[in-house]
Image (cartoon, rainbow, N blue to C red; front, side, top):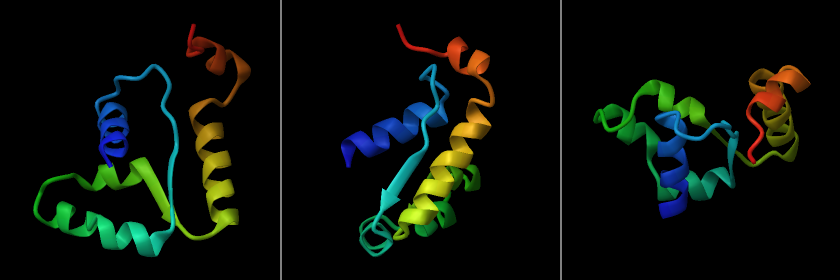
Length: 86
């Protein structure tokens, strides 16, 4: 849990040079463990924060999300080269 929130916070604050898609696999589990809707309702997170990750049970949905996010973030090899970690 600590690592999940740490990574989400880093992405939210644009700290890493590379943004990475986050997939929480097992919607029933994650929706029971963390009530993101309640966090939004009570102002603990913003609506844009819910776009930092995908919660799903579908391998196909996870794959399509991952593929589309990577294409959005790194539309060309030149763009990917700009953010390669050394």
